[in-house]
Image (cartoon, rainbow, N blue to C red; front, top):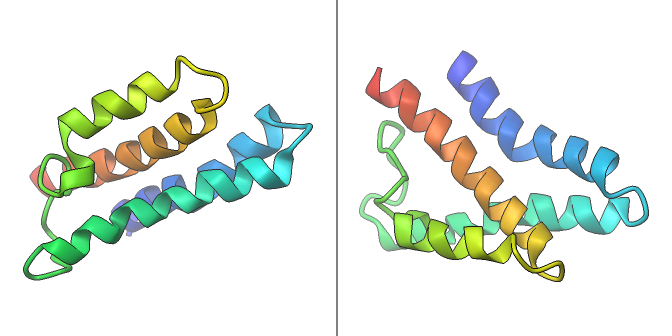
Length: 104
């Protein structure tokens, strides 16, 4: 239950909190972008089976690789793409926390 709450809390509650407190001028836009990072999970459609509860997504799915994360980090350096970088890295954090539970 803790694994579920942490994983989905980071996916859905953290974006709302970040958008609300750090993007006051454009809260709704920021929250939508931060929540939309869940769409990166479309790369799960390339896996067989599509969903495996005890599979670590990090470095397994194409958009969850360390190479992809390097690109997400580079998005942080530009003001226009920073929110997207934060959103994607927050998603990676949620999946990383999930991997910690799987491997413990």
